[in-house]
Length: 411
Length: 159
Image 1 (cartoon, rainbow over the protein chains, first blue to last red):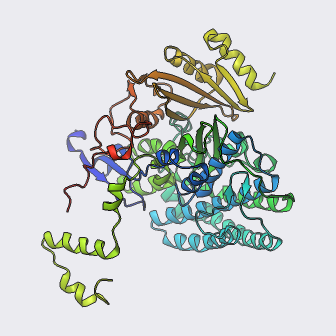
Image 2: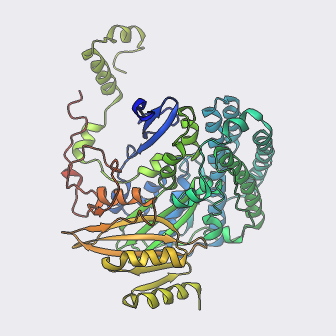
Image 3: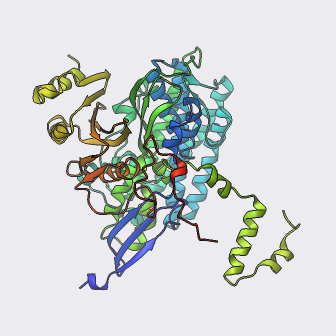
């Protein structure tokens, strides 16, 4: 009977929960989701194909732009692959600096998530607080690397900037402040009844399902899947650090929140170890432009879970093949399962709780060709004229209003 | 004997045809070349008897006359077994591995869309990652595919 009354509701590609496109086709019976289908691919930019047509060093900057949030993850993962192919070992100090930036990135990403999660459940104070505190780590990243996003700290054979004693002091000061704030968030997460009630039992993913569906990162760890590439397949300086892999057995969005705030505390711990044990020495070694033929698989624990790069070299200065598997593609397959038999109102927070990143997931394919590029790039004036014309043809004429409001013609 | 050599030994003991076909690249990284006929047996054995329960991804390769697929398997202790198989380009048929790894669905759809594999047994569902109006027989990650080949259909009449 319920099926006969079911309604299909398309949600997306432009999305209520996210700033990125993904399309969900929900079959509803009343408020209940009977079936959820996910359609991805809207963020396809042809990065894998583009990598084959550019040199390794150009590719490094390209893969760093796969994602604006975990850009260091992709850059480091790719560097590791190319260094292994070239048979080059970066100096220890470089590995420590890479790891330092990696953990700072995790902090900014988890704080960003905490804010988004707050927003999705109507707790906007949490969004304001978390994002205000996130500025501390954003400033630190800018101080160390020169950039707030796409840090550009990596190069093949090491890193491009050294850290000074002043940097070290600033990072320690920032971390102290953030640790204090994170303790506050932990008390919010464990004591604030509204938050607990809203998140408990929402977006359930049992331990067995998490393993079966291949969930990674905090999404898996919140279902007691104790997997973390930093511990299991250590890279950079992680083999020399003392840290815990945070897991939780709530199996729901609440568990995913606890795992992420718990991981923040571990990151502060790791950063202090990195700074006090930072070895002296050079920060990079030379890597030849042409990379020896071979194939490697590099793994990296990004803030959202395991990132994997496969790189195949043919002995030239351009790779034969670059394959990227970002964590969201592994997790999004669990989302459809989490939504089933749940309420429609839970959908935004359930989707947000895997901390999806569709630009990471959808990287690959179609490189814009010359013809497309001509058609695709518009000046601001052309775009404006196109928009006005588009609406005019549909019966809405903005031209009079535009004249009234626009400061100067043709800007 | 290192754990990687143990894995190599066990695989060749069960699949004598893999002699000389498994290489230990470094700690925690093994690569194996497996003929299409025994792919499922090898994957099944790795999953059920050797705890390679994680499928990280499937990489498609254009090898000129053939298409290659690498199944990146991993164990909880960080050891990766990368199983590669090749199929002729005229008949690029693979059997689905969703029976072993339900999450393989997205990776197999990528193989279909981008490399032009035919994956038998793949459940019905939306394509990934290309748009619905992408022209047939255009496989962007094949080496001979050039962006100029793309017939722009999307948005063409939208002015």
